[in-house]
Amino acid sequence: MQYELFSDADFQQEKPFAGRSFCLVGSFHTSSKTLQQCLVALGAEIKQGLSRNVHYAVLGRDVSTDDKQRLLLLEYNGYKPRVLTENELESILQGHYSSYIVPEKISKDLHLTLQHYLNARMSYEGSMNPLYMKELYIAPETETPQAELYQMLGNRGIYANAYIDDTTDVIVIGNNSLRHLEEGASDKNLRYIEEQYNRSRAQTFRYVMTSEAELLTWLNKQ
Image (cartoon, rainbow, N blue to C red; front, side):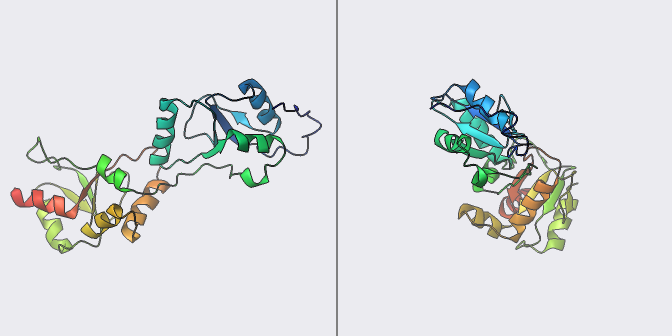
């Protein structure tokens, strides 16, 4: 499909995608150069690679495995560019863009899944005390009395807190929260973890995670 390149006069009053960035991945029926010129005429910035600073990811044909993995990693860390098909891009370039406008400010919006837990799962192997001098966040709703749990950790040189901050190394979730993750559900404790990460300056979900049950199993072996 051929697109008319808009003149500056056409858009001197309206740049609907000003402050927004697009990344085109894959191949398209129309040349990427032409598509990019049309988007720039609408005020958009063109990015050459997928990153957390991209507002829109336009997926054409033959998208590489690397680009698919980058999109998954962005979503894993809470960054969710608006994904567009070539047909949706055509609609935008034909002037039907009102329903495609996203906020200019890019914000993290992490949603914890079981995959986060499995990827970040604490390994207790290979060290007598892998948690020594670590900062642990203990979710408030544990089956073990909190005072007892804090004492057991303190006896082994492990710090425990009821909050998450920049010094937190390990997140300990309750057994109920782990069951919720396994069911694809959420709860207030999981939402607290999400909120603290989303508010932080961290660009990747770096925390190590463990469950109350796994932690107690290890503590009771010591």
